[in-house]
Length: 390
Ligand code: MG
Image (cartoon, rainbow, N blue to C red; front, side, top):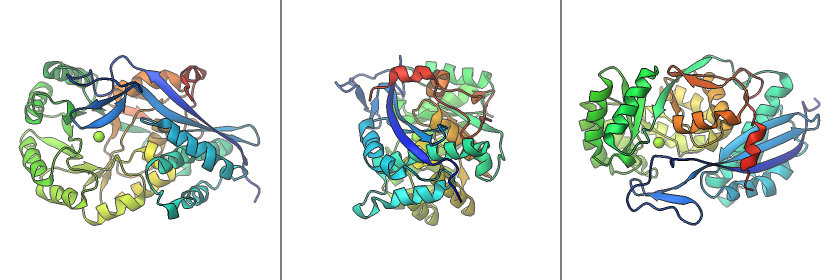
């Protein structure tokens, strides 16, 4: 069979969009921005950029048709860009975007014997995979969800993620504001709970009332016993799920927490492939998974989501820093899965950057609208290329 539109060119662009307030909220005492624009958050010992950085991928078919992808560029984006430009792009030329899974498997195989089956390599794969699926969808004139089995959910409930304000009172006020806008789920970040996680949970519950879903991101801060004790106490305030309480490598700890608490445990934003998910499913480490499209790409996201279904685990996808391209892909793939109670909504990123993409993707009144155009349903606006740094 002739290719739908053979891949002629693969390009990548590092985008860095300034923001007024850094991700996770204003800088705390002792937190400073270094010469590369990064800040280390004391609450979770992790490094963050002070701008919104991601890597865009543009794939052009022989017809001139273009597919767009985006991947994680949150820190050291040049690593991902170099892998795309040096390794993946040249191999992809001439390949058929109508074979996205075969192409993804072939690219994954290129570096596996050297141990590159995660990290920056798979982030780069994720970005090009999204672009290939987008080109496929555009070539056949169908939205991505339709290619993945069908649009089961044209809208997806969104939970508000993070309350980036300096004081607990301001964070409670912001939570109430979101509830007033029709959102029924809110997650707070333990890394920013200066008054204590339990105090923050109690204050938020008091502020929003009994019926709003409250979640906590525990930012990998605890060992299993500490996590169980803390989450048990948070459950007294009706916690909907607890996220990422123990270090990502600690599979036994994850399983112990899942067994030891009374509410669902949500994990997975940092994992990229079914090979990272599978042992956790088998050990019953979580009852909610949070795959991140910027790490997985479409092909792996779907495999992971279907595997979750087989283990009776819900999928509540993660939302990372980007201009909205991998967000659109995430909504499309989520729309094709069966049980998706929520999708994370990073309002401080999504709303600010929505002007940089075309299409009808939106988040309002507590739900996302899945974009309806062909492929992933959005494209970068010309204006975003003013912010390309490499
Ligand atoms: Mg998280």
